[in-house]
Length: 487
Image 1 (cartoon, rainbow, N blue to C red):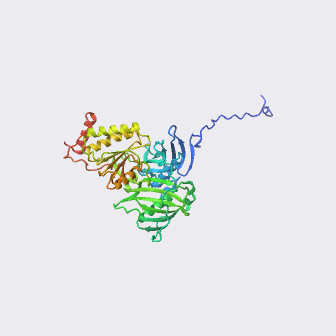
Image 2: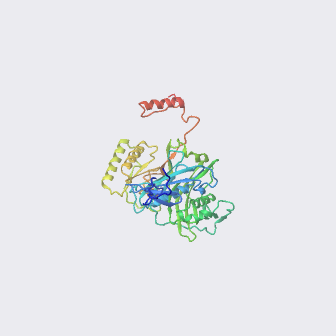
Image 3: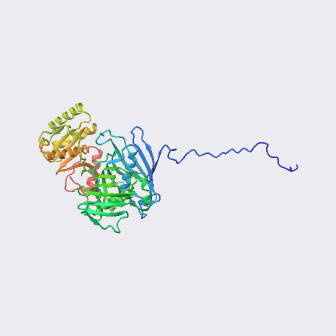
């Protein structure tokens, strides 16, 4: 054969067909069926079908949010961050004000890696009216990149922001005493003390000031506001090794967003609780907190977020509550049982059941039946009424209100008792106690699991109820072997 002296090219164009698989996915939130959330603390949001609620998601780390941990150590995320998350998520469903938000466990930003955040706003409970607006439950969870378990950090209720009403006198009176703030928290410009009240001027600085417009209220600015409370409105911690941290936020309303500087007035609301009014430099309202209660915690608790035993045991704790200024339920019927302490339990509960059934069948849906008891903690008959009506409240939400008092004073003839009752009913809470002139409500609080010595007396007697089967035997075995119970 002979080698050709030239190469002939095809008379048609080269075929440039690609055989690589084309990408069909996308990391864009919209392509994944989510709504992109333009917020520094939230990445995306999705509506929950059927409920009208939303689920907001995010991922936080010290690399993406260095301002949350300026020292680079594993630190608890400020409570003001959780407030901002709840308000922002609630804005999407017209419930951008906090009726109540209880911080249950510290959210600790890990030193390495990231943390997933979920903020869920549920369906309206349809209990709102012109006074309170509708309410929606809210919860905030997180988990680290190393864990499969979600930790709940906050739970509460959201509502629509109320029309501005209240005293926003945030400039200190002439008789206020100026406080030297040299060398204290960044952004704390001026502080005055006037009795137990504190007045202050605060401002964001540096990168935080540039980012203020992206937030409802930048958490750093709110934390600076709260730091001013230590000058008088918030008492010192009386226990060594503990610090005061925000616990329950009530009636938090934001009237303007993106503030970079504020004038504030902080007023004490009983022991370890404050109220906050904040306005801009022109005096226009920006933020109102009806009540923020603090609790003293050991710093070791900051690392308890991933403790699997942290949700093992709870107890009911009666906590004080701030009350609204107005009440519109003056025509609600009252079933007064304060003089029925000696009545037979069956007779009393039968009478109460008949009255409640009559109320549910005949009274309008927006009318609550107020049931007054006296000293239900120590009276078996009155306690039986509470047990019966708690079940009825679950079956018929927002139709029955339980109020326990420590007096049998007639509300019709005693104006002080009547005013206290009206203030209690104005809170919208379904269960309340009026003791020693204070209004308290029941809330779940964690009970520390004891270590070391047994909390049970080995010489005492333990009663096991409902333990006729295997579970009862296992319980008895545990009491004998671990707690040395012999009776």
